[in-house]
Length: 220
Image (cartoon, rainbow, N blue to C red; front, side):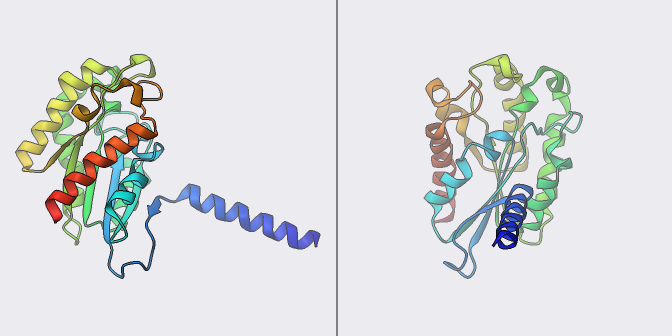
């Protein structure tokens, strides 16, 4: 019995480690033989605060949603943690998505990163181009990230509003890509944030609503 318990414990540890090491895929496999794969690309707001799961609830069983968020990641290639250099970026491409939803920019509003804002548009275009090369030719959706209500965690609200978001809008305009405005949806709702930067469950629902409504409107 002791040996059996040890084997069960080892199996549980391996299983848990696998979940931690892998990107999270949300969806009931088998409910649709060819589900539409949606890759949610972003920072910690994507990775750990529930919006991809809420998105799948709204999209339904015809979709499979992959959470490829990386806490602390940036658009900027000159930062301490460019998204394009993270393993989740390669996992997102291996997922072969039909739709890519990119919500980055919050960490680009950190002062030490913001000093490289002049190259932000070109860096963003490079990231987008990598997804556009995929054989699935995915739809690319750019998201204006949520507002910042407290600067103590690092990201600065004026940097986001006056510098990062205009660059995101520039990229969407120059590449003729659809833009989802999560910023405006939450700008008057500080109560929907845990710490002024990361959303509560209610905030995650607002983000998921904005994204799902945009995707449904375009694909129905």
